[in-house]
Amino acid sequence: MQRRRNVSGPVLGFLAVLSGLCGAATTVVDALGGGAFTTIQPAIDAAADGDTILVMPGTYEVTAPITFKGRVITVISQDGPAETTIRMASAPENWRRASVVIFEKGEDTRSVLEGFTVIGGQGTEWGSGFNENGGGGILCINGSRPMLRGLIVADNKASTYGGGISCDAGGAAWVKGCVFRGNFAYKGGGVHTQGNETVFEDCEFDGNQAPHGGGGGIYSRGVATLINCTFFGNIAGDENGFSRDGGGGGLYNENAHPRVIGCVFSGNRSYENFGAGIRNFGVSNPSLVNCTVSGNSAPKTRGGGMYSDEGGSPVLVNCILWDNRDKDGTVASSQLAGGTPDVRYCCIQDGDPDDGEIPFGGAINHTIDDDPFFLDPDGTDGIVGTVDDNLRLRQN
Image 1 (cartoon, helix red, strand yellow):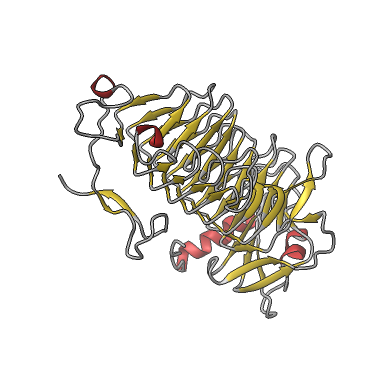
Image 2 (tube, rainbow, N blue to C red):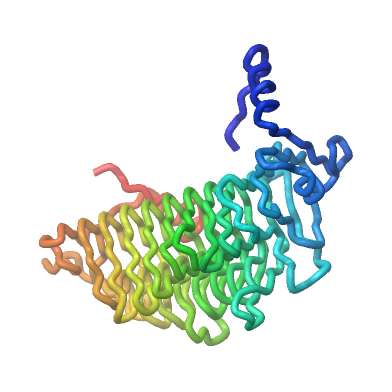
């Protein structure tokens, strides 16, 4: 969390006047009784647009989802997610509506949730009427596009879409500086998104799982934007079972065209299906710029790094694909398989870097097959795909 300045003297007086003019207020929630409320939802219910709800440290267990009810407010913890948790009870009031937080009244980025651990959600039924269950931790529907900042979204589950977060076709979110860890869903262990305006910036996806439908980290159906995100150790499929249409341990694109900028995919796995780092299903044309895809594994299929179906045309610019493994080892097709990729200014591992042949256009596309010499690709713990991996390049 960014350290806040101490405000005093004339500045504090000015802010008090401004607050009064705008009608905004700050309401304190404290589970120990030191604020106006001891739980979060009543504070939201009493808030007006522009208000801030400041939540003191503690664990706030809920039996029904927190909902902003369309209000333009900021709900923020004082001491960040390590100290402040919103947890769904193990026995919610209504198991068909058991997400931890739901945005469903058209909220936009002026509605802010910041600085909490969101845990224990079990998802909410929504969508086309086929008993779809999504958004274990957070659900964004009906055109809602909230701002989510500095959250740890952990150990949530959904039987269908988005163990951590799910956004329907009309919904989206701007997600900044959040961690998705240990979430579980049929499709999109960490996140499922159908919208065209979802943005993930400076986020971490660690150890999420989609056992059957794909997308251990993210399952995307729209034009999501991913900026400076990391995907470590996410899993698509079940080692002991058949994954019918899975793949994409890190990212699964279903007829989707996401923009992926400055992201790292490492140590992700795909069991029984294609594309351990990234799977492009159907006509999916993601664009990757300044990305590293390394150390991912699809041991029984193809495309340890990325796999595209016949209709897929991914664009890769200034990317590194290295030491990704599939059933053929670590050859060029193990790094990038299928589809008709457009590759420029990239470094992609070849089965024999000394044979004079460079895959994917070679010098014509300014592409090389030389070892990038990562500083420490398996980190201090010696395990590829954990957050201590250092995939920066050595000097020279």
